[in-house]
Picture: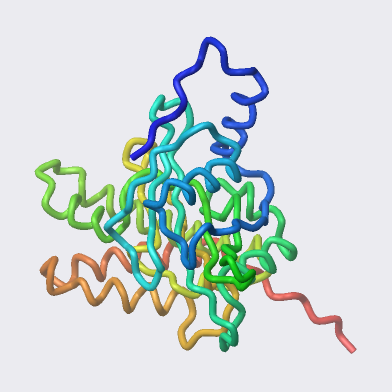
Length: 277
């Protein structure tokens, strides 16, 4: 890992402003290119790291691979300011597909931002702040780097286990309240963005921050708005019921889902009134 350039006494004020801007919560999506020194993106290559840091506008940076929740990514890394002055970021690589069935994830994020620019500043979701198209020496695109803030807390999947095995008598009550909050937040999310579905709404894509009143954050919006076989509520219910054997009795998570539905339908969207003919 590399560390930030330790020149706090002499570093120009502008450099610190740029560094802070790179890590501060984004108000816009910045799209650019990264000209790779080799045939592919290699986060361990010093030249590639230097180019990445220049693109982010920072002196030097800790770049560590993230082992969990890699999914179908071409790699996931945590970007850290070792001084602790700025929050951690997540960077993931998506291989470039010349003829994808649907738009590549990076292109889809750009389209979503054009349609809903408020996504970049929505505190209840994680949306990219920077996208870099990585070009090889021949000028052909190799992959996209998608960079975003790291959501605080743990995934709902881990948080369910934490609450289930907790000796705190209020833990299960806390879990039921969180599920209700997830339902309310999902309905509000869909309402803010024209009824679009998250499209992968399950326990690994919901973060719970128990150090901040169990604040809920939705992550992994790469498929937002894509047509899928199930609605968000259906997909979430299926995902939660798959965990019932791990947390008996089945009625425990069934009750949690009832609270999720209570929160979701507490914010009913009124149907338009028809004008009598």
